[in-house]
Length: 234
Image (cartoon, rainbow, N blue to C red):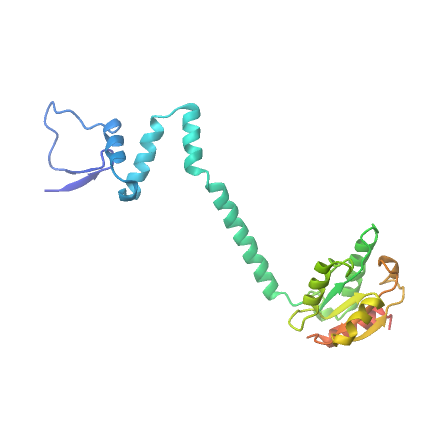
C-alpha cells in the first residue's frame, strides 16, 4: 500500500485506491477550511497554516481581504525597519572599530550663530589633513563640535566624559577659560595660543580667544605635536 499526502484535502490517502464511482469528492474549500479551523493553531504544521490562510483569503473580497492581509502582515514593516537598523548599527560599529584617526579633537565654543564657523572649520580640517604626514592622510582628523559652551550641566558632563582617560581624545581646541578651569585636574599638558592664520581663525569662536590643549592621556602625542606645528605655522 502506497500512502501519499493530499495537499488539497490535508489528509493521507492510499495512492493505489481510486475513489469509488459516484462517491462525492472531498472539497478543497469549505470542508478543508472547517477541518483546519477546528484544530488549535499551535497544532497546525507550516503547510497547514499556509493552507488555512489561503482558504480564508478565498472567502474574502475587497476591503475585507485588505483588512485581513493588514492584520496578518502589519508587523512586517516594523520587522524590516528593525533589520535595516541592525545592519546600519553593525556597519557603524564595524567602522568605529576599524577607524583609527590621525588625531581626534574636541572643539568647544564654536559660534553656533556664525554661518561661517563650522564650514570654515571643516575647510581648515581638510587643509590640516593635507599638511600632515601623507602616510596617514587616509586616517584623517576627527572633530567633535557638539559642545557649544560649558554653561549647561549636560555639556559639562559630556565634556568630562570626553576628557576621561578611557576616551579616545587627543586634544581640545577651546578658550583659555576652559583650560584654566580644568588644568588643575591634570587632564591637559599645556595650552597653546593659536594665532589667526590661513588654517585657523579665533573669529569662529564665541569668546574670540582659542587655543589647543594637548590631553595628558593622549595615545597619539606625536601626531598632536605635528598638528600643533601645522596650526602654529611652524
